Image (cartoon, rainbow, N blue to C red; front, side):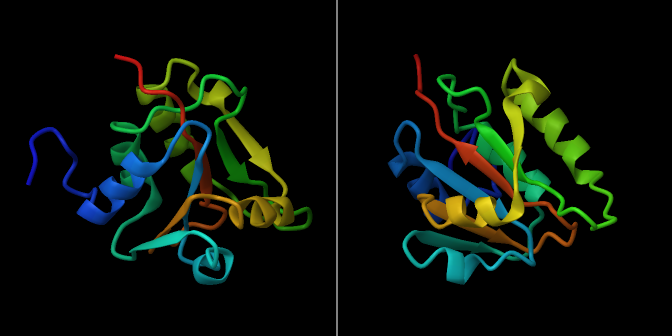
Length: 146
């Protein structure tokens, strides 16, 4: 165990986060996301017993968001015709604001199938047991500044 590291961050996940470089991306996926098929060319970490919000909060304690792009955080846009509420997005806004001064302005949306295309190019996918719909979130890593 380590001091100051959220316990939800497993050794495997910490290693992956540390290996990632500037502008590398990761997806924290909900339980419906096809993590294994999307992640054929990346690292897939299972976190089935956890939800996205608690992992997002823990990751952002050690993971700087990219300051060279306007939207280093992206959500999967709700499909036209889907009558789905996304209250989890409000949680994401609060968590991002806690860790990045841009707050909700750092968060964008990507159309569902474009999100899938982008997910195939990420460094890692963290597959959670999150049951909320449209709870997938993509983060782009920034630079660690001392």
